[in-house]
Image 1 (cartoon, helix red, strand yellow):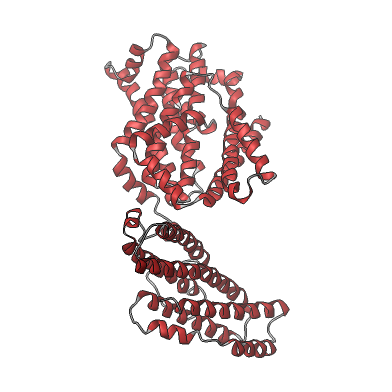
Image 2: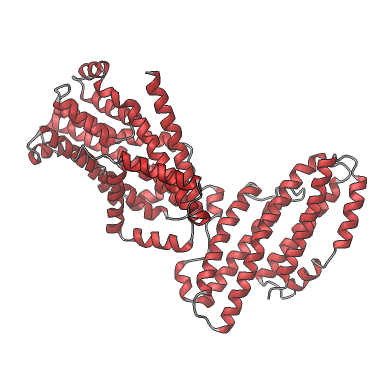
Length: 531
């Protein structure tokens, strides 16, 4: 028994590492064109349904599909609205295994894991293919983890104590429903449990109705297992898993309730319909599983719009996810380059506003805000995500034919973007170095604070200059960023002599902080020269 538990634990660990790896490697594939292609594939409900059914049939795990789509959503490759129908139809795809119990693609995923892993190890395809290979390798790890989790409990069906338990609960319809839910938590495959239920019914261990209740119980089990496995997800990607839990749990409860209604009212419901459609007991149970998954799809079609609103309340976006979304750029805007440039400039001003927000984490005189301070690292990662989106948007605009004035504005916007991105990284390094150095600063502390306030003032001036509030702001920024290299060198020498409270490493950090400040001033000067 301990070996089974160890196998389950190893599979669970591989599953989580696979989910995280998919997200990390897909970030390297995030491009505007790829998002547009995925969006086109999923914008048609029929096509989205076909994709979902295919994924479910191939993977035989709607849970795995939900987590893969969560990674796509988190990395910006797909929107939540586009992902929800695919998740719903993936449930129906798992019906394939129940009707064809011999359907097994475990070998395929072993080949995927092995080939992708070897390609990564020997760096086949170079850096260009590394994100895609890494994502495939992580998918292989995820499914291998699921396989180990299934394999750890596969002997249950043949265990004497399992048959004793099945005999013990023969008299209770509710007990077998609960058993189906608990089995689904342990074994991450509803279709696999359905096959076990069919085998138990065929062997006379449980009745046909009880086997159907085990199958319906897996719907609730899917909901519970997904809630457990997604406990580490936050915000937008968690909405996908909550949606999967919601439609599966609801379909399991509804069909379980129908069995009770048929028993106590003698009316014909779906269980009787299965008996009418199928001549054999095994096929009747296959239809019971089909009804379960079809109900989840039906619920998703009926409650798609309200579900999106509920999920937004249940799993609000984190600060980083909210900040990482471009606010002004839209695909429709690319048809009008002149208007699109205005949107790019608005997005760039928003990116510049992230920079003094980073400094607010270390400023003594930071203004009080209604919302709490956002961590500098969070702002920097969000800025990088938006910056990549802006750069891809600009590239698409530049490739189009535009009039001469618009082309000049596009080139200026691209130059501005190439300045903002390194400036964001520099501000993050400044905040990090300052945070490490400031606690040890005695007499040097006020100087460090003044240095931060000077940089903050220049950043705010750059924002005003970019916003076009005053035509003199660019000139003011240009004068503020005048060359002061000799002055800063003297400051560095004098402060190093006088900063006896610093050890050798801290003196190096102090010198590095001044270098970062000088670099920021130089970059801001380049920004002031773009008209």
